[in-house]
Amino acid sequence: MATHNVFITRRVPQKGLDMLLNAPDIEVDIWEGDLPPPRDLLLEKVQGIDGLYCLLTEKIDAELLDAAGPQLKVVSQMAVGYDNIDVAACTERGILVGNTPGVLTEATADLTLALLLGTARRIVTAAEAVKAGKWQTWEPMGYIGPDVYGSTVGILGLGRIGLAVAKRLRGFNVKLLYYSRQPTIEAEAVDAEWVDLDTLLADSDFVTIHCPLTPETKHLINAERLRQMKSTATLINTARGGVVDQDALIEALREGVIAYAGLDVTTPEPIPVDNPLLDLPNALVVPHIGSASISARNKMATMTAENLLAGCRGERLPNCVNPQVYEE
Ligand code: NAP
Ligand code: GLV
Image (cartoon, rainbow, N blue to C red; front, side):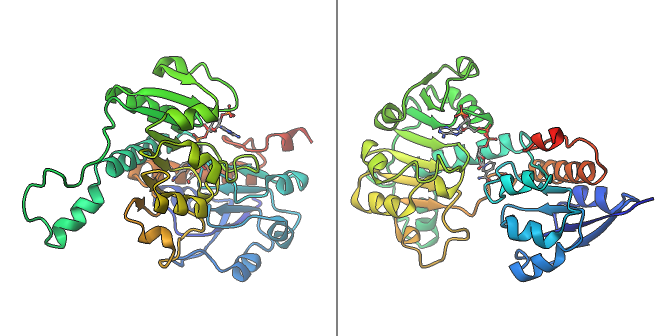
């Protein structure tokens, strides 16, 4: 039986790992470090492999694909977003790219609601105050934030995660606006109104970002766009840091152009501890934990293994980003 060599760039949930370790035709090499493999080592490790199991922390570009060699059949990423992968370079070389849509939708929508409610109700600020011994009395003016209930929420990208966020928000009696490049029939079920980006920004109390990072969406939310928002508004981002011009956001939060931000994603990641964003009292930043639920991570790991196995074996990937490779 022909064996296929695969490299896994980090220890991942055991369910996914076992699918590969127990496959008789798969030879597994795994990077055991807690941090991503250094670039030099990654370029060395991919040499001669048939399949790569990677994370969003790795840059998968032409240099890496060339270092791997012409036998590389599949790049299987344990994430739905794949802006770290040069998909065109993969397609040119006939390399399939897999991702994990759907299985992390609910977990990421939950985290979005956590950031939305957490920023609105100043949860982290308040909890830190308790720990610091600053809870001296019930404060009639303390820790006051905007109501989520009855507010207007603008969803930038009503795809899988945006829609799951919308479904949750229906329980908060909100007015839902959304902006995507085209309207979607799914919006009817959540009573969301398709508006242009200008209207979404101007009318929303909360704007939540759920579009992928692409050349078109890079810095889509820039200084000018931030100025279109209400000065009382909150910006939530659980998509990709690059969709927002972060320097402009820092300035807007400092100057009171907008009131608050809740961010699961930043530029760069990890964000250096001396980044001014972390000094702002009106920014809540968490370390890219959108999909960090037990069930989502297990399903992501098994789905990534399924894509990897299929690619190595010359079968169709269950979730393929560049199916045009099959047509060539
Ligand atoms: P999806 O189902 O493909 O939804 C993406 C949405 O963005 C679609 O509604 C799409 O609509 C819209 N969109 C695309 N380009 C746009 C543009 N130029 N302007 C406005 N809207 C645009 O993707 P998903 O599964 O919901 O995931 C969305 C993103 O979330 C991923 O790409 C990933 O970056 C991020 N994510 C983050 C985490 C985390 O841990 N924080 C977890 C999962 C995913 P149109 O095509 O009609 O424009
Ligand atoms: C996480 O950010 C993902 O894209 O799956």
